Amino acid sequence: MSYAKPLLDTYPRTVNVDAGVLAATIDALNDCAQACTADADDDLSEQNVTEMVKCIRLCLDCADVCTATVGVTSRQTDYDANVTRLLLEACVAICKSCGDECDRHARMHEHCRVCAEACRRCEQACRELLDAMK
Amino acid sequence: MSYAKPLLDTYPRTVNVDAGVLAATIDALNDCAQACTADADDDLSEQNVTEMVKCIRLCLDCADVCTATVGVTSRQTDYDANVTRLLLEACVAICKSCGDECDRHARMHEHCRVCAEACRRCEQACRELLDAMK
Amino acid sequence: MSYAKPLLDTYPRTVNVDAGVLAATIDALNDCAQACTADADDDLSEQNVTEMVKCIRLCLDCADVCTATVGVTSRQTDYDANVTRLLLEACVAICKSCGDECDRHARMHEHCRVCAEACRRCEQACRELLDAMK
Amino acid sequence: MSYAKPLLDTYPRTVNVDAGVLAATIDALNDCAQACTADADDDLSEQNVTEMVKCIRLCLDCADVCTATVGVTSRQTDYDANVTRLLLEACVAICKSCGDECDRHARMHEHCRVCAEACRRCEQACRELLDAMK
Image 1 (spheres, rainbow over the protein chains, first blue to last red):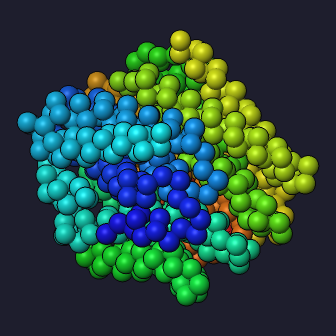
Image 2: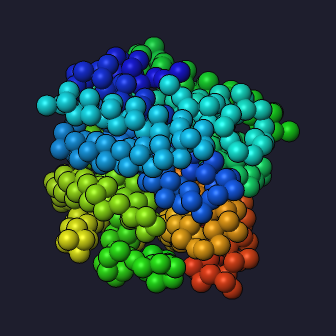
């Protein structure tokens, strides 16, 4: 149960963008970070771990970037649109790379299919927030 | 939409504890981390910010501890019960402190009431996972 | 005592950029993340905390972005220059904003002077790594 | 160049423990977190990656726990000794596990020897801070 939307709705000042779009992005980022952490570990447990090295690396990066972006987008006070935008663009880039790599393993490893879905949803949500910020 | 449960269900080896309890805890930790980050920022925007200092500090700690625990509990490979247990105990302690402090402000600040709820749910989930690990 | 350079020197494959520049950037990012976390807390303890709200917020963002960038730049395996570049640009932007704000308080609060120095050094190091990546 | 000690020396209130011991621990935690992130990546690039799986997993955990502990120990305002103590104990436990595993690979992989050193130093520093807190 996410608290992103209720906490935006009770923010004491004015939220800088559409609260619904922002909350959906925060949720997608948070879910994607956890999915990537878990998928990197799933990959480590596979017998063909040597073929999963790129996937593990991208999942670790994606978790780091999404976690930082949850932090920055969860803060509304003295908001800096420039930093948020660059971070969201970094998220779009790593979610695309990570989602593509996970997709390559999706037929063989169901956990990669799940993680690819998390990355796609997060990439899309970040794009929508970038649009809403214009 | 959390991917914690689907990713535990597709883990290639055996999950060390009940997957339902574990997934519920991962979700509660992830939600609590975001709630605490957002609530610290809400507090910063309040006019009586001087009275919110302790709440901000505890929220920041709670976010850090919960985020680390999401990472550690999301990994199943070569699982170390001892580290997990100590971290979950640290989570219980900080969620208790942070929840208590948020509760003190709940009447005046609705966002603190929401955050207290996130902390209580997370504290409870961590206790249940600790029980399930016995 | 940083291990960034020794660990780049013992990396089993080829490092993608100049190892000295990369290690210096990782160190600057790591130091800046800690400085910003500590300075946000120092600000919270000041009597004029209401005037420090913007500084606290930017310090929290700066810590998050620098921490994620330590993670991504510490990984060399299957390196993705595009993501690294966007993250470094986000670091430059937040270190600039945070350093400027800390500088505004540097005369009154010595801890803000120290944190501004950490932000400047990190901004400079990220710019140098961006140059080295060209 | 660490800013931990200068920022403790300029903290506006009283620091709760010996500032020298605390700053040394913060530095050791920060260095260990980076070393573990880098070593996990070094392991991923080794030809015998299947034998490094446990090492990678422990390094990822150690980085997460140390990073959270940098955050909590860098904050002095409204300090909660109980949470700090549990986190430091979790650090001691993961640094011990991770250091032991890295040591097992130290002869074959120089980067594991370096990471073991980072873990030993961090474990020792956390123990000293725990002693200083008594």
